[in-house]
Image (spheres, rainbow, N blue to C red):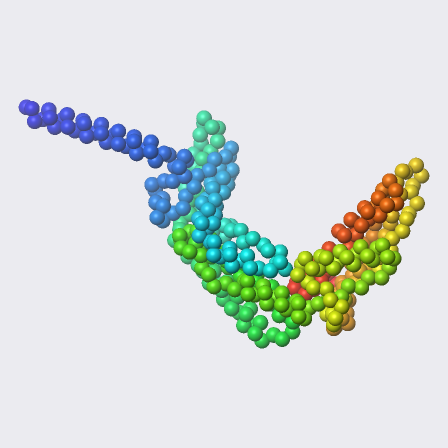
Length: 341
């Protein structure tokens, strides 16, 4: 008789122990909306993250943002050498930081769990990304970008025209930057070190050498001393910042035009003095003997006196004339399809 009783007691103890163990496990691991993890989606196969919002869409958006953060943090810890290589990019490319973009990776995200929390009056969502599928997709995209780079570099070898060479190099660098981002995303998913082998630093140096040797510019502006001085200084400065090196020797591009400034009578009862100006700045391809584009600007500024009005006008000239001209020159050399003739 004692044996059945012992068995019942032992069974009860085991059941109670199992319940306690289950509670302890649940308590230590937490619910999926708290931890961002679920046993249905093991970490060896999936990346997961939870999010919260006042609506289902906002909860999903928050979950996707948190998933991006996981990938981004993984990339940051693994991409030091890639960032070091990218830092060699010359100032012509404005030293763009290769921040990780996870848009392409997140196209494979789905949301298997959504739950309403009456206490928080909002929704929780679980974002799930299959590592293997996302890795395969990224590997395919990266291979495609490598083929495009190889194709452009093959084209570059058969080109002798400096302008065409510059355009191809810019395209190559743009594709290399995309490839580096894909490589960073892939490393974040796979846990592997980012793939090296992109020569963005060398290609940037080639581009700068090309500009220095062949694609030089002269700035000639006629007009009154005040206006021409302001515009000439600003164009020269901005061209330098963008990597162009103004030169008076054998220029391929000539920037020329007229700037006129003058005092305009103040309206009756107005305490201000007005300065008006008009300008016509032309970007000319000397070798082809054609005007690439003309930048037309006009306007006026007001001040308490003539001196203040002139200072205000100088600021307007910097923004209204110089930068469009620089943009035109850059587009003509690198992005001719953007020009409106």
